[in-house]
Structure formats: C-alpha cells, structure tokens
Amino acid sequence: MSIEKAPSVPRFGGPSELTPEDQERARGLRKMRTLALSLLVLATLIFLSTHIFTDNTGVWGFVSRASEAAMIGAIADWFAVTALFRHPLGLPIPHTAIIPRKKDTLGASLSAFVAANFLHAEAVSTKIRSAQVSHRAGEWLSKSANRDLVVDRAAGGLEYVLARIDDDSVVALTKNVIIPRLVATRKTPVLAQLLRQIVLDGAHHKLVDLIVAEAYSWLGDNPQVIDEIVHNRAPSWVPDFVNEQLSNRLQREVLGWVADVRDNEYHKARQALDAWLVDLSDDLNSDTPLSEKAEVIINDLLSQSGVVDSVLEIWTSLKQLLRQAIIDPNGEVRGRISELIGEFAGRLQEDSDFSAKIDDRIATTAGDLAESFGPEIASVISDTIERWDAKEAAERIELYVGRDLQYIRINGTVIGALVGLVIHTIIVLLPG
Image (cartoon, rainbow, N blue to C red; front, side, top):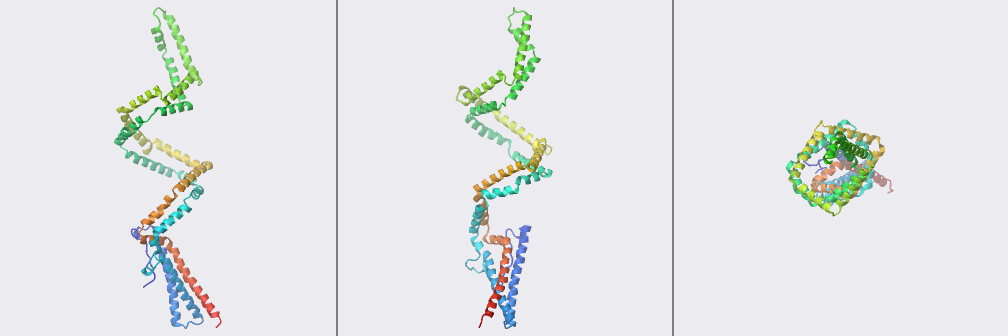
C-alpha cells in the first residue's frame, strides 16, 4: 500500500466549479506532493541499494545511515502533515484527522482570534486612514465612465423601488397608517416650533417682501379702488372735488406707507408681524383655545376623503418627475448629478484637508462598528466552517496551505539525512 494518497481537490460541487486560482493552487499542491514523495522514494532506493550491493563500510556506511535517517524523517513528517487532514493510510490512529474532527472548534477559535486581534477600533481605523479611501474614490469618480456607472446604478435602484410601490399600497399606507397616526398625534406644538424657527431665521422675510411689493404695484395700477371706497362711503352732500382730493391724498399716503414697509426692513409693521407670529407660536404650543381649534381644523382637513386622493396625485407626479429627471438617460437632473459627483471627486483629490476629514469620519465609524460588532462579523468564519462537511473542510484548507506544508516533508528528508550523517560520524569517531 502506498503511503502517499493521490492528490485531491475540494469537492464543493466538483473540480469544474473551482476558480482558476483554486485550480492553480491544486496544481501547485500536487507538484509539491510529488517532489516530497520523490525524495522519500530516492532515499528508500539508496538505502536498499547500499544494503544489497555494499557492506555498509567506509563511505557507503555514511550513505546508508544518511538515507536511513532521511527515510525516517520523511515518513515522520509525512505522518505529521497527513494527520492534520486525514487518517494516515486510512487507519483510525488516535489524534489524527485533526481538522475534520476539530473543524468547529478550530473555526470558533479562528473567529475569536480575528475578532480580538483584527476587528477592533484602532486596527480598523488605522488601516482605513492609511488606505486613503477618499482620495482613491476621487480618482475613480474623476473618470466620466465611472460617474455614469454610479448614476446608472442609482437610477436603476430608484426604478426598482418605484416599480415595486404601487398606487394601492400608497393609498392603503396613507389611509390606514399615516392619517390615523397624524390625527392621534398633537400637531400644534410642531407647528409652533416650526413657526418660531421661521421667525428666528427670518425665513419669512422674502415672502413679506414679495407680498408688500405686489401690494404696492397693484395699488399703483388700480387707483380707482380707493376712489370707489371714498365715493361709496362719503355722505351724498359732500362735493365730488372734495372726495377726489381725499382719495388722491389717501392714495399717496397708502402708497407711501406701503413703500416705506417695502424699503425699510426694520419697519414697525414688520416688527409687529414678527411679534404677532411669535405670540401665535406660543399660543399654539400651549393648551389654549386657539391651539385646540387649530387641532380640530387640521383633523377635519385630514379626515377629508380628498386628502388620500391628493397624496396619490402627489405620488404619481413625484414618480413621473423622478423618472424624467433621474431615470431618463437624458434627464436634466441626471446630468447635474453627474457634474456634482465630478466636482466632489475633484475636491477629494485636490483638497487634502477635506479628504482627510472624510477619511477620519469613515475610519472612526468603521472602527466603532468593528468594536461593537466585531464578534458578530468574525462569526461568519465559524458559521461558514461549521456548515462545511468535515472532509470537504479539510480538503478546502489543505488546498490553501497544503503546498507550503509539503516543505515540512522536504525539510524532514533533508534534515534527517544530515542528522544521520552527523550521528554516524560521531559513532565512527568514538574510540573502540
């Protein structure tokens, strides 16, 4: 019986499913096995030849003892390497086939080792910072083809989402979830906070400017409005020329006041409006009759059947807008997104402080995730090995490390021969 098992490859679906890299590993493993076996056969032939054709004296004694020790070293190391992956010669010798028997334990130990020594914040964050992720991303995104690829993938993902959200789902979500939740929630405090923030930020000033400017233009273009008010409210005995002078004066005063409000951002009317809005936000934020009435009005509006129809119309319009602007290859927004990505990529390459900040944020986030979920991430190793068949696991591991392990057999043959020479030399040199 041959002590050398024929080279094998993992049986995960058969050799035809091995990747080119795995096939190359299998060839390398077979080559090193053949070399190690050839050295053993050579040592055996030399040993047999010296015992058959010589008297093992003189030089032949050294050759005999060297070949004998080489055989012993080769067989011992063959046994040690083989015992990792299978039973040598198929014999159930204790403490052999270590990997098939202990694969789950080895997987758990490897998982714990990776989590403890690699998946911690300092190691992960340091590696990401040294990798210069943002600069590399900038170089990749600077190419037009890559930017188009990113936009295409994003558009494809958006289309996938839109295609799977039908109108009935939107109606059901609005009617059965969103509206009941809004009705059950007190809304005036949110409106109050929003109103107060608008006033503090001055976000309403542009709207006030627009209204005042339009009012000034309208009053200037329609002087007959004030004339009609004066003539309709003046007593019948007042002469027309008096009414005309009064309406002209009133027209000038009103236009002057509106112009003053328009041009003076600190006008008392503007300040009074701001104060009134702040008071309104305070009333809405408290349990006042105003806030209660506002809640009733909002709830009545939400309960109207037209709200669901309006939401559906908005959703339909939004889908159409997104498809035209982003998903459509000729959409304007799509082109602008590609330009923005290009500008972002340029800044990643040119602004070292900006890219360093992004790298730092990525590294910190990744480090925190690794610190928090390291054991769970590393458990992929133990879970995967646990699912493997014992024999297939041994073959898979041998495929990756077996080639290097064959050097143990080669070294055992060579070192054994040298040790045999040394021992025989000492025996020869000893007196008597």
